[in-house]
Image 1 (cartoon, rainbow, N blue to C red):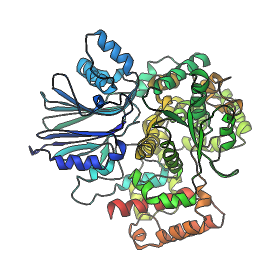
Image 2: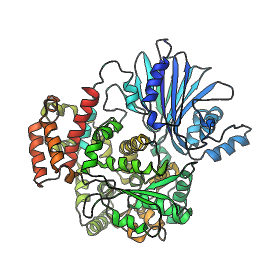
Image 3: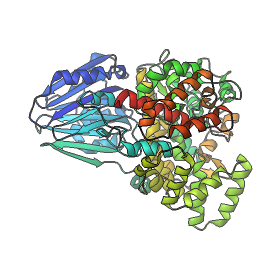
Length: 610
């Protein structure tokens, strides 16, 4: 796990080493153990290393091929590198290190771009071909590892994080108001190649870049929907269990200690229990964020199911004071606004984990393939209507209300049936505080309203969540973990598991009003029963509604909303925002998400734009 940077000049000017070094310095938290550069006239590559596999100097990058033709910089892990190494050795290829980087490089030399389909892992890598004077770059299937870039007439530059690229911009960067609109309206980011900065894009997940003769070609190399259509789904919970054990086992390949971010939910608990009961690792370290009983986000009663099973459990309790203390550093860690303080709980968790391990596992991605969010009931009900399965619809809606004592799934069902224009209008009406002139940045082609909310079946909704929703969660996790030089791994995003789960019948995901049905069945006698049968969904929530009612936060929030800079943005109406915040203070309404978005956006403007 590392940080990569690069600069390719199109104006025939030699790359200045100082520019590469400056970019690397801004990424040093991603790789404190080693660093290296490669300069070849108009091409410059830089690398900072966090040593995980083969801790010796043999893992130094940039790594050059045996014949000196190819140079690679690589951020991530190829979990199945041992199997690929054995296959390549069988073809007569020699290896001189124990690194997955050498396996990746020699796989590319042997199989070309087809090697991407052989990798099981997470990555963003770049290979320079000195003979062809060309660049090939690739990003993993689901966007676990980041890859940002700037493309101008004069140069192409890339980096693992945005601040490194900002160092190359001579003028002040400009905001992307379309991205800001979707952030405020839908609480979503990263659904397209755009970032909050107009000058900077990100390479989409499952995509590749070829650069030669000043021509930059970007294409998808991985098609999730196509691969799901060619895959046979699970036939039994035992089959699912076998594959999740394999996925967790692969993610344990490390020359440094590994721990688990244990929330108490079924996903992270599955990983923990598989390690204990199936892989015989009862000494695993776990890290949990807990709050007081009754506070939002507190799952301590479920985490305590492991109190007589695990010896190494560690806890952190984020609070309003710690967020206040960490506010500037936390927001700068992410360099783009976030729609809630949920990533802050993970941020503090990684700070805790760093004291004990260098690698963590968590349950990211399970909800998107197993219909874990309650929104998926709406998609499922819509699917049942469109496919004429009225009897199943009647049964499932009855069981949903019975099991969850909620009508939320029905509300989302009716919302998803609406035309695109109506979906956007309803969201705008609900938000209330946007300035009228700012609404021009919304249109009927919003990716969220059109594609994500427009899914016509449960399967397509799940696939679309991988395409347009999952990536911002992965981005926050990468930023949080790498800020503390910790590598975060996500076993549920083993592509074999994703494709096979998405290809499975709907009733393996939702059955009788219960989500994640096949996972629950597969974990009988593995998971603590209280966790296996729990029906609520919390995630990394924080009691932010309470935090923003404290006197210190009230002062900061009111000062922010009342500031001249906030008013001059012409995005949020300060009078309406103050009225809404007063309702929050009085306990009449919980608008903590909106409050955080206002504050986070203004902090971002001041840091990067002003």
